Image 1 (cartoon, rainbow, N blue to C red):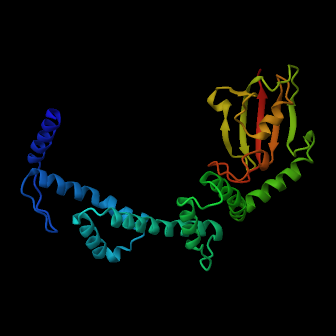
Image 2: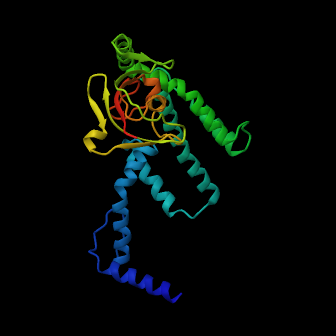
Image 3: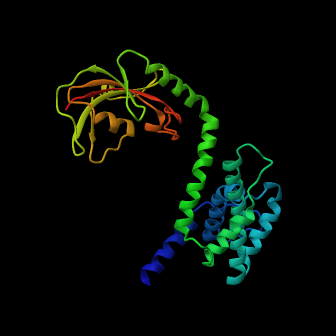
Length: 287
C-alpha cells in the first residue's frame, strides 16, 4: 500500500508541474491532475475521431449527437445491462462495415448488389448461443473454401491479360530449339550438361539463379548478391516448379527453366510478380 500511495503522489506532483490548459466543454481545471485528465482527452481525440468514422461508421455531420451520447455514457452510473446493450450496438455498426467489405469482395464495383447484413448477424447470434451446426473453426474453413473461387474470379478479371500473356509466351517458347516440356507443363532448356549426382528428397541443393518476368524484368538474382541459395529438398520452401526441376538436374547443370503460373505463385500477388505470372529462371546447380 505504501508503494501505491507514493506512486500516486508522484503522479500528482508531476501533473501539478504541467502547463494547465483552459479547457472548453465545461472543463473544470482546478489542479494539475485536472489538467492531466484534460490533456489525455485532447490527446485521444484524433484517434477517437478516426475510430468513430472508420470503425463505427458515424457520419461526422452528426458529431454533436455523438458527443452528447459520449458525455451521457461517461457520467452515467454503471449499468451492466445497459452497458452490454450499448456495446452490442457498437458491434452492430461494425457488422455493417463487415457486410460492405464482403459485398465489395463478392460483387466488386457493382453497387446495385449488397450482402444481407441480417445473415451475418444471424451467424453471429447462432455462434454466440451455440446453435450453429458448425464450430467457429469449421465455419472459418468453409468461408475460405467458398471465398477462394470468388477471389480467383476477381483476380482473373483484374490480371487476365497477365495470364493470357504468360500462356502465349509458353506456347511460343516450347517451339524453340532445345526446349523440352514435362507432363506438368514446365519447360526447360539445358545450357550446361551436369555430370554430378541427382538430388534426392533429403538432399540439400546449393544453386545460383536469376529470375525474370516474361518481359525480361529481373526480380531476383543470387548472382547479384554473390551468395548461392540452398534448397532443403526435405522441406523445400520454394515454388513447385523449382522442386520439380531440381530433382531432374545433376550437379553441375545449368538450365533455363520456364515455369507456368500454376507451378509458380498462381493467384498470389508477390510485388513485382503479379498474379498468374509465368516465370523464367536460369538455375545453376553448384552442389
